[in-house]
Amino acid sequence: MPVEIKKVLSKRDLRTFVNYPEALYKNNPYYVPPLVFDQLDTLDQEKGAAQEFCKSALFLAYKDGVLSGRVAAIVNFKANEQWDHKEVRFGWFDFIDDAQVADALMEKVYEFGREYGMESVVGPLGFTDFDPEGMLIAGYDRLSTMALIYNYPYYNDHLQRMGFDKDTDWIEYKIFLPEQLPDRLKRVSSIIKQRANVHIRPLTRKIIRKENYGLKVFKLINECYKDLYNFTVLPDHMAKKYLDFYLSILDLRYLSMVENDKNELVAFGVTMPSIARALQKSRGKLFPFGWWHLLKSMFIKHEEGVEMLLVGVRPDYQNSGINSLLFADLFDKFSKWGVKWAETNAVLEDNLKNQGQWKDFENECVKRRRSYIKKLPYPNV
Image (cartoon, rainbow, N blue to C red; front, side):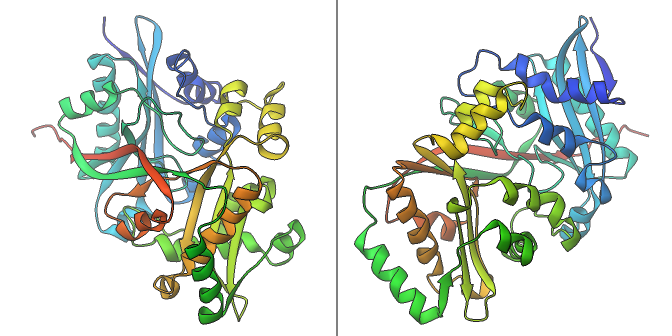
């Protein structure tokens, strides 16, 4: 029976699109659902933050009348201009292990890319780097995290069958924390404070509001990450849409901000207690009782691990050893609170400087994920 593809046109369709993985991964112990309300906001064709510089379309696949897959087709004009290429992105690509379904969904991405004269197809990527990206290719037997994608191994088989090749890989580390901070890290961090004339800036809600600290972090993210794979440098006015909400709900004790003698932000570490188990219990929903699982995990009874969401050092400070001060501050707090491990966000495989930051700690590479690319096929004319 042919696969029916339906374009998402209503709020009801959008909720169906967002909730589809709940059925696909129902009995998978490693899948962690995202926050449903956040996904609805991100994918909203009218209100989504990235709609200012992106065009997108969402599609649902039905086989034998049963919902069997989904995909988002995205053209990020800002990224295409910044990187001087013409790419259509695919994201939120989930489907049953069926070639007909996978091919029908991807054909919609091709069609969307052709509408805008694109030359290649790449993904999985989101609208911006604040969205999940990269398809898991190793670490299927590891619990996923809030910020990243989990997928079945067969996803990769279908992409390779379609002719997609590797564009880039990311890796993720699990860092095991000792009961006490290594002496070398303590000494180095103390020296760096004096040599670079920097200090740790504790944050309060009042400081965040009064000094518009979300914008400070946002500007530094752009500066630190602008040369990394397919990164989209975003305008300042989007800081509120992307960061202000999260800074308002995060446990500020899990943040580390380093400023210089001019009170300029030169490095940041944004971490949070792992809420993966809480998200599984709540199924990504706040109501009726999901909020309690999340609140408990974030502020009352923490898990043994933390997620390292964002870490950055201003380019002119990157060879100063300031990252040692940043991690010394964070890991000293973690050890006091009984945190036993930290899992990094995805790190580009060729970013050796970033990977070298964990040399003072026992660590393990636990996951690898990939972005795929292929030339956009055009029918023969």
